[in-house]
View (cartoon, rainbow, N blue to C red):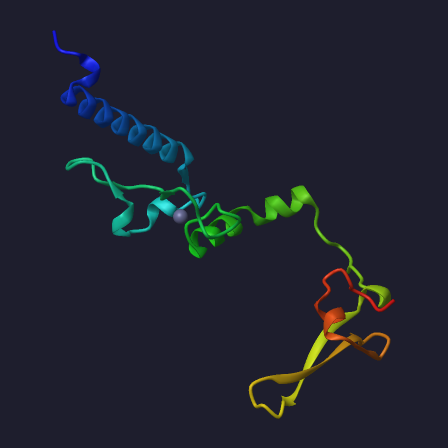
Length: 158
Ligand SMILES: [Zn+2]
């Protein structure tokens, strides 16, 4: 009887089996991660990538992907996203609440930052910018440093 552990054929088969199983697990994981486009008419669009089924049962199907670009990772394209919006928007607004009077942004919350290009420096390789806090409601413009401009925490002049 040959020693199983040192038999090269056994070793090769073991590696092959291990890789095969690893690949199946990966494939299953990907399949589990796949999800369908939520567009209500996705299956009605005549693109080749939506065609599924064997001869005699050919049909268009809702797109399935591991991730989508549109609508918070829910829709395969803008058309599908707007199909959903057009179909459900009134229901969604009634459910989450419509705006019946204007919302307001007051003076205190109306500050924004701007950077204004001044021109090239003498070296012609870098440019000078001036930075400001601006408030159109108060009619104010306040100079700030580049550091203050870049500071995301700083949203109003102190
Ligand atoms: Zn779709």
